[in-house]
Length: 321
Image (cartoon, rainbow, N blue to C red; front, top):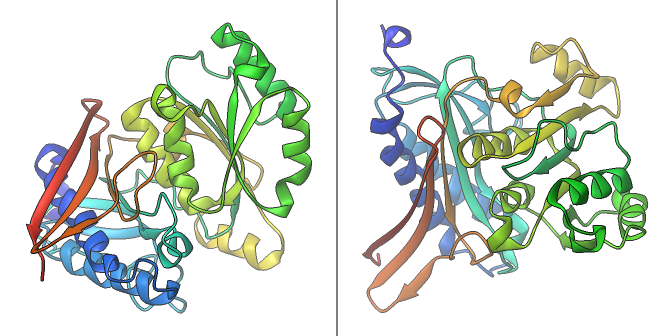
């Protein structure tokens, strides 16, 4: 039976890369065309088609939304041939639909896979997130600290001044007070318009991206995807679900979440080994975007396995169709 088969992360990883590549290639034709929905749908269709070629008994636990909101890759949808290991799948077929539509940096296709029952079934609500890169003691920074306290704590751990810390924040009105508090410390702030999975990943490669810490509220599903990436790359992330109304609290209950105030660590959001793939759609600080030249199209993919802490950067060049 499928659920008795071992999770072969090494064998499945290349297949996962093909899934993210297919979604990126499908959305490439819509870069800069101003149609977010069409770009997202193209990525969804391609990702689903590729997933169904894999020998897995997969269930989408982080997807495009509830069944009545999403015709494909909805939460609970079964994917794969059904002949392989039972796995949880978290995905964002196009992280940065607006970025793609406007041809702005850092649009990605993102997918993670882990053994069945090991990815947090985060409801489609907001999550308060805090992330730093590898090499720091547990709880160097916490969600209980104020934004200013986090900057000072991380600066002390790094042996630098608060002014040497750069924090990545999603540019939203709800973050204005937090941004003001961060700036009072002298820290620099990298504001991003969309794409907080990429924002968190920045922390794991601070020497390349210049980002030391990520904080602020964004989608809870993206929090699980970001935790999957950090489990492979190293780093810490803390997340607390945020609820605005009874409907959202009902979504949490449906997902089996009973403690609405719980702070989840990286290893509580992703409790077993995970594989993670992301392909660049538009160029950014993590991945090169899709490059078209006469007769050819090229993608760059980040493929990672937490079991070995391996990080591969793969270039895929194929004939243009």
